[in-house]
Amino acid sequence: MANSKTTKKALFTSMMSLLLCFTMLMGTTFAWFTDSVKSANNIIKSGNLDIDVQYTLGDKDDAGELIWKDLDGAVDLFKKGLWEPGHTEVVVLKIENKGSLALKYNANMNIISETVGKTKDGANIVLSDILTVSTCTQQYTDGNGNVASGADIFPAMAFNNEGGMEGWIGYQTTSTFKAGNVLKSDKQLQPKEADYIAVKVDMAETVTNEANHNGIEVPAIEFGINVLATQFTYENDSFGNQYDKDSEYDYDYVVSTSADLVYAFANGGTVKLEGDIQLDEVLHLSEGTEVYLNMNGKTISTNATSVDPVFYTYKNSKLTIDGNGKVELTEPSMSLIVPGGDVVIENGTFTRNVPAGTPAKNVGALFVGAKVSPWGSQTVTINGGYFDGGYYDANAADIDEILAGTKPFTETADDIAKRGNSKDANIVRVALKNNISKTLNLSYNLMKVHGGTFVGMNPAWGDEGCMLPTTPDYLRPWSYYQGALLDGQTFNENGIVLPEGYAITKGATEDGRPTYTVNYSK
Image 1 (tube, helix red, strand yellow):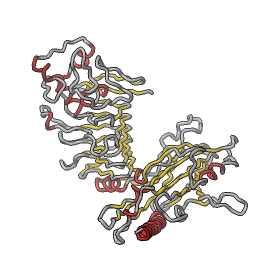
Image 2 (cartoon, one colour):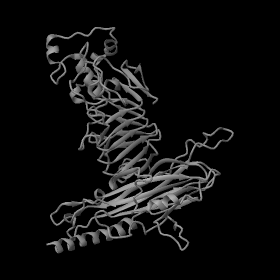
Image 3 (cartoon, helix red, strand yellow):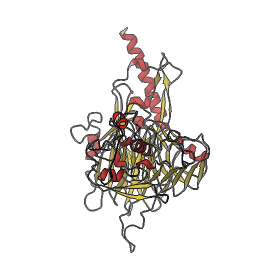
Image 4 (cartoon, helix red, strand yellow):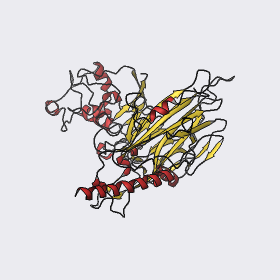
């Protein structure tokens, strides 16, 4: 039996080795920046920027110096030995600014495609769940605008003990391969500076012989490393240092139709709207992918009642919305986002048409609650924007005065008996709960608000009003904790207490509904 298991394990690891050496490497897209570089999956135009990306696998020449190679078209990464449980390999990237302009860059590892394998028992084998990626970085100059001559100390250390730098500097980021985005985002490089990024890929020790594929449905993974750069607001001219503040990365997709936008979301990458779009399909952001959406001041409107929600993000994905555009929902029941993955909203206007008199039960939430397990595996971060869920119950109009003690709050005996639970019928508390949940609703601290303007509700009130006080007047719609929407906020039974760095200003819409604008300076 022992020999049989050894043979089966050898078969598994041998096949995995072949798959990883061929599917991972042949599908890998590496690029360095000169003036213009094209690779299989990326088009990179750097203008007058000059970035050079090289890599080393730890091999040395006759003089004992590390051998560095251009990363463009590399096919020899991650194939030093048989991939088996516990196997580790390391590659070190050197990203150098050889130009005269300051710049910022993004370096991302992302899955292009993946084939799920099957065991003999029919169970799935998903390589992106088995592999983990860790990174560690250092930056060097010699103080005179030149890359330090001793900079190879860091990459040399990266290959000690099969990539284990623990105890010296430590890997700073670890995630499953599927999560991606473990490299660098918006990293700045001054002229003649260089970053070194050690990338360590491990096969989990928990992989067992039972993961041996059935010989037909073979697991495979294809991935890429993309490096995108743009000017950074550093150099001064007669107009100051902001002349290049609006320089942008080259986009993977520039779209002006619903079909093109759906395609871009399905594949992941950087997306820019070129025109207004009437959407006729849900924008699905698949598991493990990332989309940066530049709305570019354009509008996305829903073209069919079946487009609900507009954005649907899956586990381990990330959606960033930027560019001061608009998303207009045409029906009361429509939702903006189902956040199964992380969502960051930088700015924009998000509205929904809800005819006057529409019952609360017929109105959906802009943000639909957590859809993946375990709880807490996704977050929504709102840094700015204007959010109008379209629903407002004016029975909550006096809430700020009630909280300030300038207007009385009265309850019937029946209200008192039912307050704080799902049978509560007090018109103020019911109005508060509905006004809040129709706009922001994402439980268990999964949503954090750092800015933005919200119609009909104050984020300081908490998810479904759970941060509203219970004494002296019982204003809290629910008796259990749903989650604070402000960073660092804790429940105070006596009133609303804003965390340090927050300020919230009250205003009103043209039709008289209250607005609350959040400013966060911490």
